[in-house]
Length: 317
Image 1: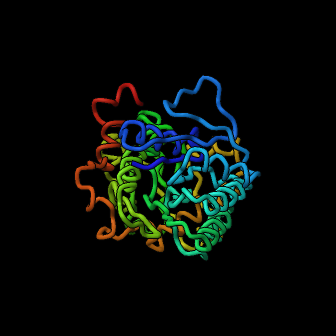
Image 2 (image 1 turned 90 degrees about the vertical axis):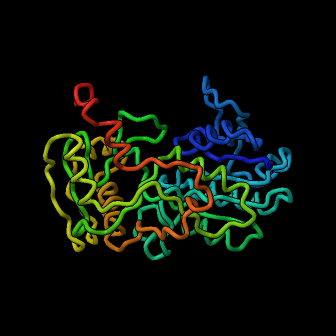
């Protein structure tokens, strides 16, 4: 048993991890948060921290004898990267802290690919900082959260996002020719693997988990079969994606109230370009699935059928 601190444990990924840690019961867990939310009951202690104060962060880690820090900080928000850098430094200084999970929760490509993202520099800075520490660290590569294609009819804390396939709008804008494999994993399955990995004697820099792998053309075909209707499908060329442009999906418009349209387009066009480069096609022989075969994963068909299948047509249309 080790003592774990989940940074950002009140957010979508963080709450999923905290639930899994609490349900497993084999590790003591605390949550680090900028502010303790009123009325939010996580079932574990929530410690208010100042991410700008490295000494204070180290004091919290030392007081609770934290062995492993799991970061679920929202690095897509500019400025949060500095908070994670301070947390890395605090963990490095703290004698009881041995392991660190960087906030990746999608994929960790090489630095030149990350530089294409509006916030990619924050990830690169974290990986570079971790390399300079004595911490054993890893980044969880899971592909794309599978529940994005079951929302709003699926249990999840992950905020809604529309990428490539808009299940509700019955539209798809496929990157490239649609024939590259894509990895999808349900957040609750990811969390089970994270908890299981705490008992591994050694971590690799990249940890892979795979819920399912399909091409985008296969996903659209399955979605059409399950929804019982043809989707409007377009293909975005590699040239268009590299120019920072995508074909807008109906479900993406809502994001413009939180982020500028140009930012959203750059974000998803970059992910689309990564698809065409095969970055989301993970090596199956390196996946944790082989080490933990008892963890049953959710497939794309499982998710789509549960959310949009024949028995759900009436309530979900």
